[in-house]
Image (cartoon, rainbow, N blue to C red; front, side, top):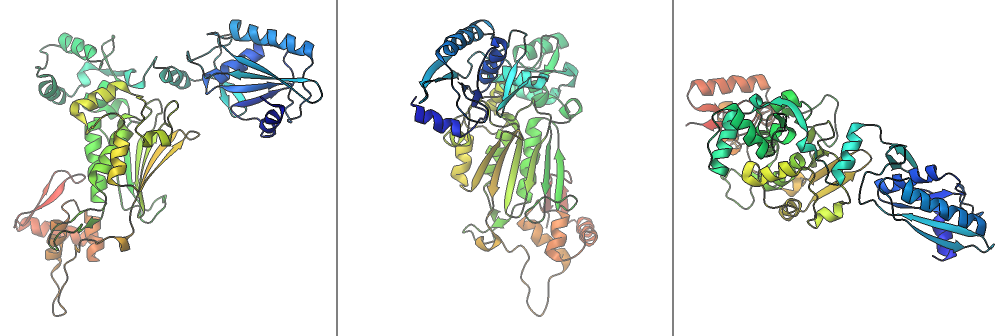
Length: 464
């Protein structure tokens, strides 16, 4: 390194990858700095540089002494030992700056001699104080994964019908007759621990009500009016719980009932197509449910605004992944057991690393935000404005002499959108929700209408 290049780098100041030390006399302190860099992305320590960026440098005696400290710290005081690199850069005043480069560690986590794990936080370092942080370090190096964590759920919490159907359809195998055989099978399938409890993957995929054991791992969906979050004002909201396949189905239904329908070149009397292809949300929701960080105790959130739809997953991108890399198909498996079962057909799956590309090919107006400070990953699907879309005319046009009755308008609206809500009906007709409900009951009594499925997630069926 040239002295001029060194001074340019020093002028930028300290950050999470560059640190200044005017001198080093304590090998233990230097070892903790090395461990912190190795546990993160690596970095460089400039010895002979003051905190304010001035360069008093080191004389030849200092250089010899500090190199001995560096060797001792890297080989004896960091566990596992580190291979570091040093370079002496001469200054104009005849003194020297030692440029000490610490690589990103391949055997994380690294400890100091007291067994303390250090991480870089900006230009400083801090201790690892929580089990979650320690687990994440082991997760990064494939020594541990969140989906194999034991839960408090016993084998009796299994949804027997769901698991039976999976065994029959995928493995052509019958459900075991007794509890001992079932436990052994679940253990062999990496769905239960050696202690006979469901692990997190087994709970999330096959338990009857996983939200009882893990209430934080649900999906919360809200449709807001306008383009910003309101504290109390919303159009539609619902929390989705249950096994991941059920959460996925319910979330897709929520999105689709809150999208506009467009003609898309079809006939005037055709029911129309969603403004954004359903396959886009299939890919993004599978990604959110399967690749999220389950060491973060928070739900996946789905926000629908007039101009965009946001899917917010707990946990930033793992390891060295970036938004640019995932756009080109790169991936890093955070929850390998979940991924393996999704690939067996429990959720729509088209190959590892292809989901983001497939969503972008269907709808190019998608942005991704990797918030490492907030530990969140957000997929933002932008919607076209009303003026840009040829919407289906769901309210039938009437002649000046007469207007259709409210019950007939309701029928027409339901024919155009079988998942339309009573709130949306009221807004389209300009009447209260109570008036809409009264007309719906009248249509049901006349045998012209029936509800299929639950209030949330079901649909209307016009009988005649």
